[in-house]
Image: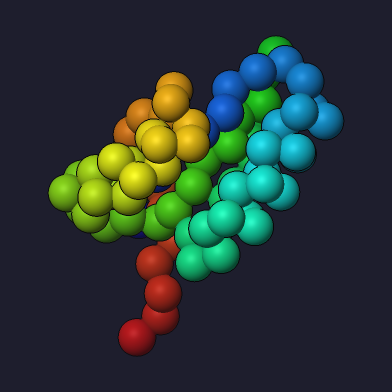
Length: 81
């Protein structure tokens, strides 16, 4: 379903992307992190936010450690009912 995620990494190095994802998972256990590849770069996007407002709340916290983090529209997975 359409929603929002926070992008915390963008770059050509797969190992660096995996390291960022692993570090993020340790600090934010409640937010899923997703690795995607769009030639020639890897991206780490986190969260499954239905609304922009919900994503903005997390963005402010995430930007303390990932200063280049920003919101992106993405297809998200929402928990089942």
